[in-house]
Amino acid sequence: MSLEIAVKAAAGAPNVLGDCPFSQRALLTLEEKKIPHKIHLIDISNKPQWFLEVNPEGKVPVIKSDDKWVPDSDVIVGILEEKHPEPPLATPTEFASVGSNIFGAFVSFLKSKDSNDGTEQALVAELNALDEHLKAHISAVDLSLAPKLYHLVVALDHFKNWTIPESLTNVHNYIKLLFARDSFEKTKAAKEYVIAGWAPKVNA
Image (cartoon, rainbow, N blue to C red):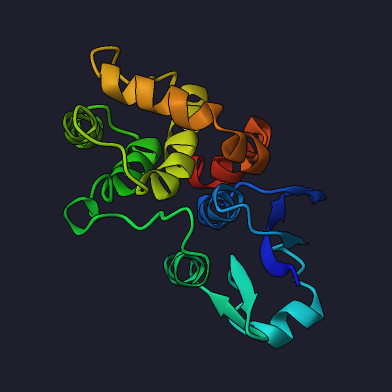
């Protein structure tokens, strides 16, 4: 029996995979573990009744596990790891927090209207820490980081004409490796939907 997962549909295109990095993280895990699954695309601005009945909070992603719908990408990834231990994707504890502040730093810089407010420096500091880490290891923490880095690359290029400093060679190589994976190609949102998803927040 294939597992069911509900993820965000693209804004204005309800039959196209949307730009939610947490949905993509869950899909990446399913792809990497080669778990058969059925995808339900959820139009966030017009959620179907059945979806709200099984998931009153209305958040994505959710998976159907043992006849229960379970939200939260952290919880989902934990369940998938437990039920489908091969290949193991659990992150060693010492690397669990790697990159955990990158997304927050990216969002602050993306929304920033003042080039001297320190948000760019904060993001570069987070990327520097990742660069140091990557000299030594790549672990399953990537499946959480990859969608966030994708949003960072696409949105900052579009809205700020900003790219990750060339000096961070490990980060650049890491991004190339991750974005080239079959699982990533299959689960990423088209760039225009990532841009459309961030536009209201940037222009707010």
